[in-house]
Image (tube, rainbow, N blue to C red; front, top):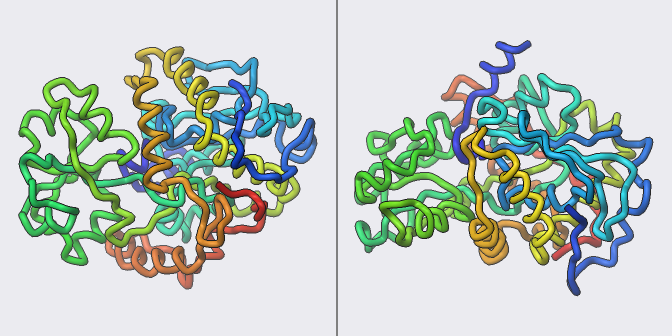
Length: 384
C-alpha cells in the first residue's frame, strides 16, 4: 500500500509526466441506496478507482462492489466488472479497481488522478490531500477508514518494557520507515522520536527486521504485518507489538475516496447515488467479507508473480478481524459510516502545515477542512 510503504512527493511524477455482491447481515442498514441501473447515465460507463497498493483487505469494500463476470487485467493489475449494490443489483455501470504500488511504478494516487482523467476516484489520505492542496487539490467524498492502519512495530522480546512509540523514543531505538513520511517529521519535531534514530531508507524488505533480530523498530500496517511476521516471514514467525500513528496524535483518515475538485459539481448526481453504495459496501465487508475476499484472492492469483505480491486467505481473514477489532473501519463521530469530523481534519491541518512547509511543499494558504473533505453525498442512515 503506497501510503504505508512510501510517502513520495507528488510534484516529481506529475511534472515529469505533464465477485459477487455482499451478503450483509442483521446489522445492515435499511437504506434504499442502490438498485438496478441506478448509476447509468449519471456516472461514467466505468467508474475507475485507484488504490494505493496491491489487492488486500484494506481494499475489501471496493472489491465488495465487483459483481459476477468480472475480468482481471494481469498486465495492468486491474479488476473490472459490473458495479453492484449490496443486494447484487447491477447498477448499470462497471467498476474498475486499479492496483497501486508496483503496478503504477509507486506513483502517488493523486499524481495518477491528475495524469489520467479516466481515473475518477482514488485513495487519498488526509495528510496527502493537505500536502498537495496548493497545487494538486483533491476532495474526499467518503472516509474509507476511520482510523489509519499505519503503525510502528517492535519486537516485544527485545523491548519488553515498550508500551508504545514514545517508549521506543526514550530507549533510543532505531525506527525504519519510508523516507518523506510526514508523520515521521511530526514525531521527530514534537520530540517523540529523535531524528538521529530514524532510518528513512526502508523499502519494505522484511529481511532487515529478521537479520538484526528485532533490534530496530519498523513501520507497517496493524492489519497486515503482525500476521505476516508471525505466520509467514521465515526466520521470524513470532509476535510483534505495535502502536498506531493515529494514537500518538497524527489522526489521519486512511483509504479515503477522493476526486479532483472539478468532479464534485460535474458528477454530483453520480456521487449522490454512488457514495451510499460505497458506504454500504464498507458495512457489508466488515460484517461478511467472504465475497470481497474471494475477488481479492482470485485477482492476486491471476496476477501471479508479475508485481511481486502474494496474499493469502489467512492474511485477508486477519486483516478483516483486525480492521473490525481495532475500529479501523467504524462509524464517524456522528454515527455515520464514512463521515469526516471537520474539527479533526482541521487539527491535522494545523499539525501538518509546519511539517510540509519545512519539506518545501507548503499547503494552500488558509486551508480548511471543507477544502479537502465533504460529507455532502453521505447517506446518514448507513452505519455499522
